[in-house]
Length: 588
Image 1 (cartoon, rainbow, N blue to C red):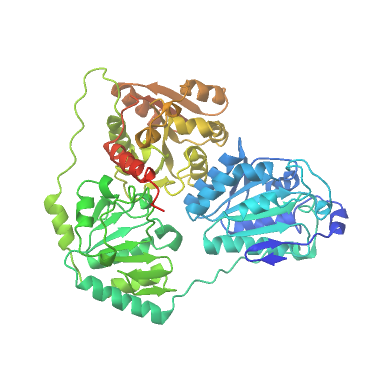
Image 2 (image 1 turned 90 degrees about the vertical axis):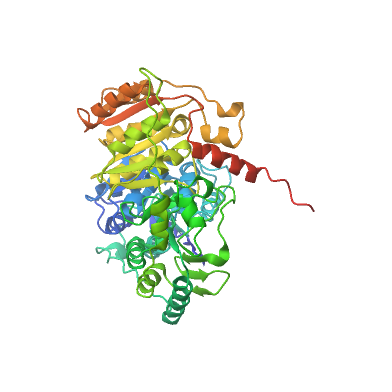
């Protein structure tokens, strides 16, 4: 049966009686493996369980696929998320219910960030569907749909494959829908089906053809005409890039528009890394009261602003405090353009719109010139005393000096959001963080996945101690995969971002010997180097070792800082978000 984007096959117990032949050619498992390879997946993150073991055998048998075992399902999901950010699509494999419910949080994060991710679950034997049997790994009910129902709100399509007759169609529909909608897909495959030969899998699968989305030509022309008229009347217009540039695949069109019109370009915080910061008109991050110096003033004083792919939530709006007027804005979403309070044009796709608009706008560099007039270079970090305890702003001064086009920065939820936001990214330097969902611990798995996908880049991850305690185990998998990321573990004794929103004893955590923990995980197998630093001299020495003698190792540098050493941006942001959270109920 099929309901919306949920696809469930009717069970045919007889299909499970065939013996499982050796080799994956012509089997469901072999077909799935080839499909993953065809869409660009080379690494699948997994946790084995008895319902997915046969499927894993067939994925391993695919020569172009590498199955990476993770320490837990949450990290496998985070790794697939990080992999999708670098590669365009990710995949993970877990077992029924105990694995599926464990990975839910990571899949929800990928959904919120518009990442195509194929979540595959090894399901019950096809003979057990429709019976009154109670299975292990369930909550003790003969209804096996609990896991499926949990995935319905955080995936764009769900396919339950428990017979071979329509398995080909269900798998292909699920994967292609994930790619088209840029959201996660859920595929459950009965544990007794992956190795059975079946005629629909007899030949190499024909590669997908995903038809490009074409704008309504009349709508496109009307939207461009109305927007050009609106912007060409403005005195000091600006452009702000948002996170949906990624899902619309419109980064190049955005740059072409910026080149053509001469407006200054800023980014919303969650779009950092999607817009080139070496562009001559780049003015920084627009984040309301915690914007890059002089950027917020230029944006909020503009008489017209084009927001391309924005997400305005309580975090990106700093507790709903942006000084933006709707009537001055053009909002360009992946498939819609809205000018001021109206008109609004649907089925107009972002890339088409930006490309066409670039040809209609008059050159206007007024706001760029205003920015250059008021701009004052950032101050120099205060001179330190000998053996003075290390300060966070000193740490990030040195991280800035490390960055090149062969690096990528992963910023964990917390004060690293704000400190990493101030880093100036060189050309081709990657940057990722999870702002919409903001799940602490995301960065450990995401670092694993991103580094596995982008082997030409050395990942620099900035992770707080509280977040690291949630997902620390998969440093083990990084070592197994011979990754060479540099992790800066910022040890300030607790959940500092929560302290600035609302303090309490629950924000203090047990201190760990973090380098000792990573050394124990390393256990003499693979390449891993650790250091603990508490002064600038020690930090400089550690960075020199990490980028020199240990450049081919996973490097873990624990940085001890004062618990109250936070960015000024977090202090401001925290107080505004706290005010938004503590609004009293509206009068009834």
